[in-house]
Amino acid sequence: MRVKVAEPDAISEGGKLIVKLKEMEIGLFRIGGKYYAWRNVCPHAAAPVCAGTIRGTRLPSGVYDYEYGLEDQVLRCPWHGWEFDLKSGHHLAAGSDAKLRGYPVETDDAGVYVVLRERN
Image (tube, rainbow, N blue to C red; front, side, top):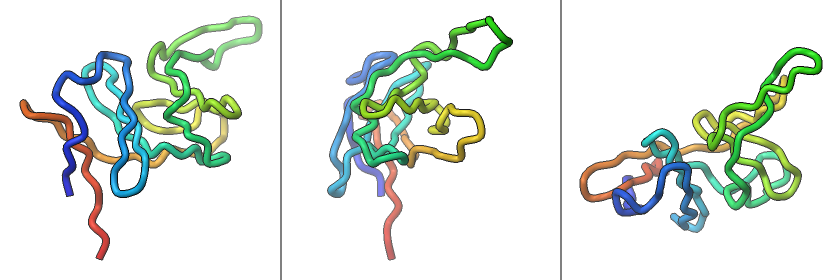
């Protein structure tokens, strides 16, 4: 099922919009002109993760090298600071298997749509 959640340009580049669909909240993010939809539940402690800040982070680097990157592509959970890649949903800690639950997003001239699976 495809549900319209926003007008075509309702979210600015690097911005977000939290919407409610089927009794759940979903965060819609725009990065590099593409939209990503993530359920507003942190896999760590069920925090409203999409209410967190969008920023960059320190990348893996050598000792005493502090390389910053992924500007405007990292979602930081407001409760415990867990960081997630907004494009893949993966938790950025080394060795972590945690991931945000994502939904496909489609766009056309009339709007932005989140695709929800139908339950049988």
